[in-house]
Length: 171
Image (cartoon, rainbow, N blue to C red; front, side, top):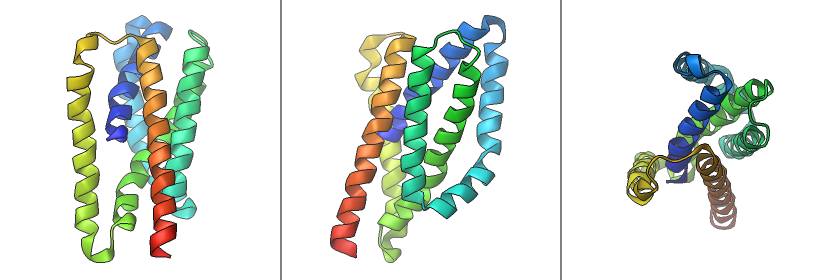
């Protein structure tokens, strides 16, 4: 669910940041953002495999949170492009690790259930986002940034708790 909220808060944050940096080319910059995010999947996936999906997702959430915090603290700086590059790295670690982690957490004969729970939670988060935050109307960059940070921190907390539960009951 919180990964869904992270998506819903993150994309407008990046778009608003790029608009502040160069208002005329924010659509092109967002297109480049998504292309680079997609192209980074294979090398980042290899990193995630080496680290383990849980560790990769935790690292990705940490990098994403730090990058978004940097974007908030350094507005209209050319260093924001570096922060966005790190954001792509972190966010790709989260996205690449999510499904393998869902399979890992579920028992081998329930792996489909684990994937279904992940996508169900993701869609629940995206759907509830529209319901809960609809009253906010057009969300400004500060609210988006805070929402992104909180969402990724909640993902970190959920990963930490699930790892502790797995260690206690499965090993």
